[in-house]
Image (cartoon, rainbow, N blue to C red; front, top):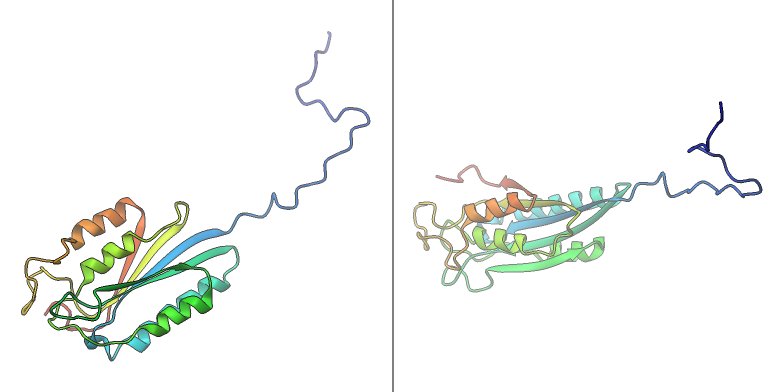
Length: 193
């Protein structure tokens, strides 16, 4: 029987074998984008240092992890005027630089606010609007001791919800659709009372 050409023919005579690609076995680092949404109102006074410490520890662990390409952002928030006149949200964009992120974390202080609920909806909307990398694992860590406006809390200065029109439930749905995981850390057992 006559043998035809083989699909698995070896290298041609005189061909120089190609050296193995050293980078072929190295996986590209896993991208992770983390945004901390932190209540910076006066009621957070007993918790703000712990929140800052948590932000720093998470940043340090991810920054030092092998095969991890991590960036960190921060959305500090207080409340809407007239409850608070300092700021509603203060957005610190993503950075991979640990020293820069630490400066952002150290900037936070607990003051202001007014009624019980705070500008949670505005903060979460600002988190969604961050420039997330498409291929990154996307995480929001929300640290607070008060709920958003419009949920029926006693003394809510904005009982119809966020004066900017942000709906926390619609924002949560958008986070789900955009594959942004949100972890909420409640700092006070009196939440929801």
